[in-house]
Structure formats: C-alpha cells, structure tokens
Length: 196
Image: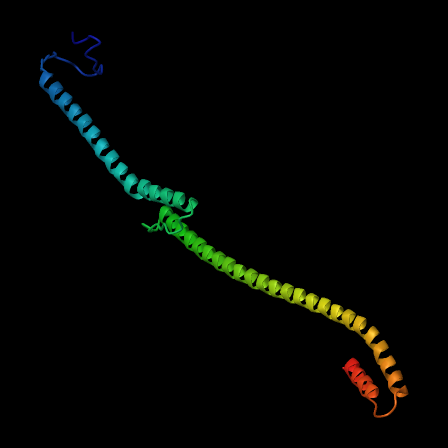
C-alpha cells in the first residue's frame, strides 16, 4: 500500500515499506477530558469569585453610598435638614455626597435666616400695630377732648348770653340806685358774681 493515497510522500522518495503502529489514546483522552473539566471548573470558580468580589465592591462603594444618599434626600424632602452624608472617597459618589452636604448646610443657613427674618418681621409688625393702637387711642382722646371743648364752648355761650343780660341790667340798676343803699350793694354782688 506504499502507493496508496493515505501514505502521501513525494515521488522522489523511495519507500521500502510502512509500519503501522497501534497506540491506545484512551489514557490521553481521559487526561485531556480531566484537564478540560478542570479548566472549566477553574473558569467557573474564578468567574464566581470575581463576580462576588465585583458585587461586594459595588455594594460597598456604590450601592450603600447611593442608598445613604437616597435616605438623606428623602429626609431633606420631609424637612429634616440635619441629615449628613460622609464623603467616602474622591470619586463621583464622594463628590455627590460632598455637594449634598454643602447643599443641606446652605439650606439650614437659609432656613435660619428666614426664621430670623420672620421673627424680626413679626416684632416689627407688633411694634407698628402697637404704635397704630396708641395713635388711634390718641386720636380718639383728641376727638373726645375736641368734643368736650365744643360742648364747653356751647355751654359757655349758652351761659354767657343770659349772664350778659343779667350783668347789663345789674349795671343799669346799680347806676340808678342811691349811693350806699342796700340795693346798690346787692346789685354790685350780682354784677361781680355774673362776671365771675
């Protein structure tokens, strides 16, 4: 079979014969299967370990900080500005935590300023209201005094009219009364009392 197609050789080479050797590859196949199985098992274990480490890394350095940030944003949304987040590193999440902390500090300062401003405004409103009440009371008192003054002027006028008549007639009668008489004395008393 030296000229068969299964024993290809160049034409310039002379073959004397062919020796067929039968070697069992069963042991090599078993070793190859075991090596393949070991490689697959090592690959799976390595993949699981790497995935576990990546998962731990993500949980520790991404998920937990984001969760803390989310909890604090919810507290701030409810009005609790005392929630603070510690920056864990110089990465984006650390920058975000630092920005969030600065924002809550600014909001606390702004809330304190607004509260102080509202308190001062309330005090100013109370002072102005008190001043208005005092001014109104003074106006009412002035109006009362003015009314009393008008009443007094009216009463004085009403009293002066008849008293003027009494005084005039007392002077006229006193001129006609004899000097030193009792009538003249009585008329002078009437005149002085009317003038008073």
